[in-house]
Length: 120
Image 1: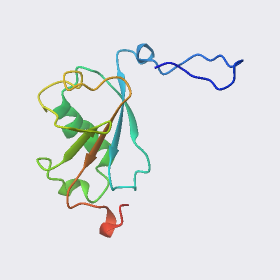
Image 2: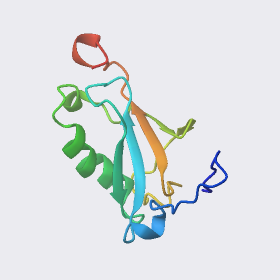
Image 3: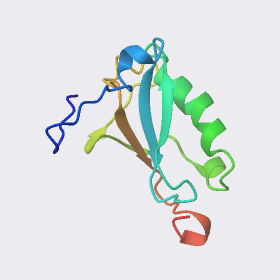
């Protein structure tokens, strides 16, 4: 992604290029309607990681403290990659699922809207 400056004298070095993450890619993950986590999580993950490992190992370590997390029916989760609806294949890698460096992944859990429905 090119850096665009509004000031002609600005020069900067982009430091979040994929090659600077030691074989990992940044993936931004957000659990929609659960603002106890106020922003997407930035995760450096290997492209070869199976999507199922993200769901079963990584996400519980990030969001498991929320009371709604244990109630998630993963078969009903709605996923978005960027602004597009997305159906991940749990057995395929992040790369094979089309997740590139700095992809944004959002998941919505129908029926779960935070603490007492507060989106928190």
